[in-house]
Image 1 (cartoon, rainbow, N blue to C red):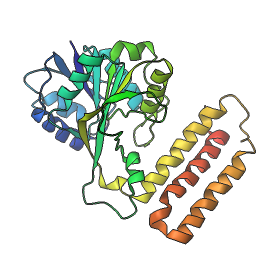
Image 2 (image 1 turned 120 degrees about the vertical axis):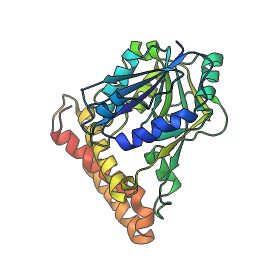
Image 3 (image 1 turned 30 degrees about the vertical axis):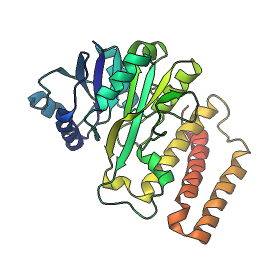
Length: 302
């Protein structure tokens, strides 16, 4: 089998229903494929609803597996081990692909046989765009666009996101899969498991392609369109990275973190004073990151 399309879901039943309904408009690839749902310890009735059926595409095999270890990285690793396809295509449970999305990905697979592919992600905002949501911030809502030209990605600064990504199953398994200490876990809105895997593949000299014509639309929930969401996201990211950087070293943070923390807060306050709250959020996010990094180094297990 060529492709396994996998959706990993946790406690997101309403969004999952819409995504599965939208898949009926998807143009099928030429090669054999399947749909694999990984239910990651959802307490919201997802398991019961999926078992009732009626959501499947009739032209392909559709399967559901339960992954009880909470965390999106664990769910994605379960998809890799359960998949029957040579390539695993990941789609998030709150996304709508364009009709020719899978066909475009298949064409790149057939021509280049890469280790991974990343596609374009567009943020779909439900009630318009807040004044403070600059273009720079859209990436933190999952938007991804490296331009209109298909190409090989070689830089550490151009990661692909698992909301729209393809991986050669055996290559990724041989590389160790997704890092289970990273990514969302339940209501903890963290991330980084896809970026870390991408950078690992680049270090291993594996080919990663950019697929600008393979487009999905990420349906953004209203609660994410708040300044507090962006601040909390960076605070948690900082805590995770601070604990990982410390490792087995002393829990007393190094002195160089103190001036970094002070400078980050100074820049945020200065920009807010000069340009207002609509323009200062990015600097405030940096300050939240350094607070989290400091606390992660001081308190959290590595």
